[in-house]
Amino acid sequence: MLTIRRLDISDAYSLIAGARAKAQEIGVPMCIAVTDESGNLIAFERMDGSKITSINLAIDKSFTATGIKKGTHVLGEVNQPGKPAHGISSTLGGRMVVVAGGLPVLSDGEVVGGIGVSSGSPAQDLEVAEAGVQAFSEIQS
Image (cartoon, rainbow, N blue to C red; front, top):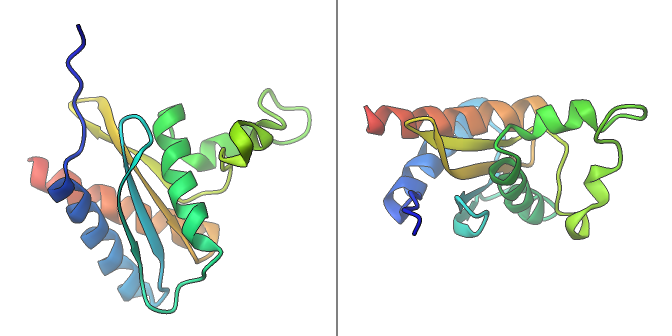
């Protein structure tokens, strides 16, 4: 029997609130997705003015980060030609995203979910996702 720790809806809202605040600060409306430890969607917010193409990207960034237990930017680095994970972005029906903006969410060193952000540049998406994770970390303290 396994005991599984996962984000609940209030945790998801904390992640989204932290990400939204950073997106507003930098002036880039974002799509923000939060998944549980299995990569299933818990909560999603599409800020007014965010890109419609970013809806699925945000969800899939969160799914990817949860699944690989690392940021999507890390997967992007090893997905280049000649690197060990080249071509991985075409797996799982194209759900594996190798662009920055997806991060795992940890509690006591264990992956309990993920956050995915999309609509800005990769650097902006990562910055906003990091703000979401930071907001969650602050309520865990």
